[in-house]
Image (cartoon, rainbow over all chains, first blue to last red; front, side, top):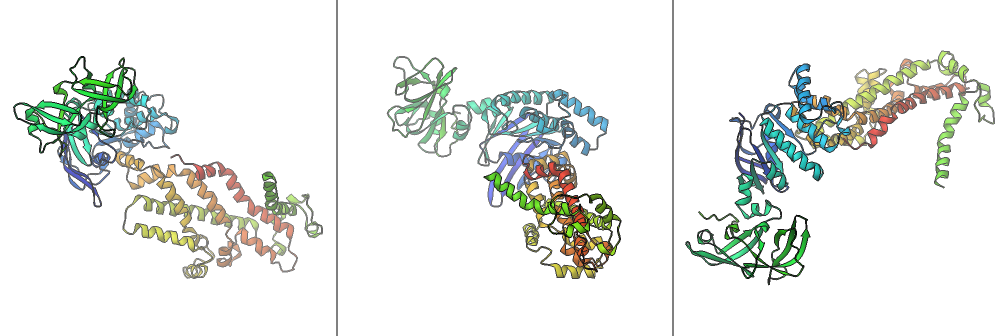
Length: 367
Length: 272
């Protein structure tokens, strides 16, 4: 049983606040992915859990014990770094054995553990090599091996895949996922890549500007983003977000909100919760379809097209709005190829609309 | 054209060395004749033997072997001493946070402006008061404190990614373990490069040994050559002097040749 909990953790460098009031818990065997743009404080957060960075305020608990003052080596954690941080002068074997050696294991025990781990990761033929003689993917595996071999209570991953090329990244992503599930080790994984986050996580933490925007399963985060920030961050292409003004609002009826050139109808209860008549309506590019006949709810003027084969991305803006108005993206199936300049009639399900408060950016839920 | 410049430059540098070699292979009569011979003679081994065995007044009465040994001990002590001290001080400055860290760094930096020649009198006074005249300690300690080497190691350490330290901390290595297990092996090539530079620096010391050694048994070879000139009967034995000079040039050449691979790596290697 290993759990990790953060209570009101804050971090500041001099006067600058990097993280404020971070609270979350990681259950035994759970894989939590912290995702956010660069500079949002996600790496600082991980490094505080590792003990590499002092905690300004709050508590980090491992298995219910406050570890704020505990040295990294005594926290029973292992970390995989972005640049792998392999000891360049040691062989793969020595790299993996170093931590065990310092913990005073016998030579035989070390040999057994390292060999086991090497087999698990397919490194058995590379044990005598130095890191310089390994490819990126192999180094990545050695870094994983160095973490696994110690049998730590918690794995910490600091953007471990961002130095790999795209193809390898996809493969290693799957490997990490499989490995983590097989070993069942509580893990905290930091990345800026939302695809990585979505595929790896049991639960996601979306961090923005030092504060948590949302903690939930990947599916929930996708389906019910807690704020405009999350809505824009998770999902490719990102959700279309349109600033709207409430035209009519009634708790029990359909409310109407208006954006230049487009009108949206939403369940009344949701709109009524807005703090002012400024709201943001969101709709995912995937939820728009070309409407047949005169059912169109929206007109989109096509400005550019990206052909991806399986799908076509249409970049444009809502028809009859000024040149500089918000961009609007539509995802169509690969066989549909609209012409530039064409106006597409689009429709959507009312359920597909997301509503956010215009001032706070927070989601307005129906119930 | 550029080749021409290189060749001219090479000749300018190589000619005195050639003269030394030539002079060391002739007997005393031929060396003093005009014109000076430009091709080597056949006296090389005779001169070599004379240099090592002879205790005649003509060559100052100091065994060359002894002077070579003194120089070797001095150069080795200076090189290793400087490397040890600089490694530790650079380690402290890069990896430890303590009060006045930058102050100490600048203090070390400032000593760059104070070479031995500038502080020679007070240093002599200190060494004399400590009773270190005519000792190896007196010869080496004042030359060991070194800003250049500290600087170079600082740069080397700064180029090592922080994650390596963090990985070692998580693996359970304390500061000194990190120093010995990780930092030293990684800095191997820099250490070798510095060793070469410092060995030659130590070997070529002239002014300082001249000042603090009064007993002939502590003479170093570089200053010994000078004393060979001051023979009583006026006629310096040029062939022996040149042979001695040749011997004095040898160890630095050997060190450079043996360590040139590491040396070049240490100065150019960037990947850590």
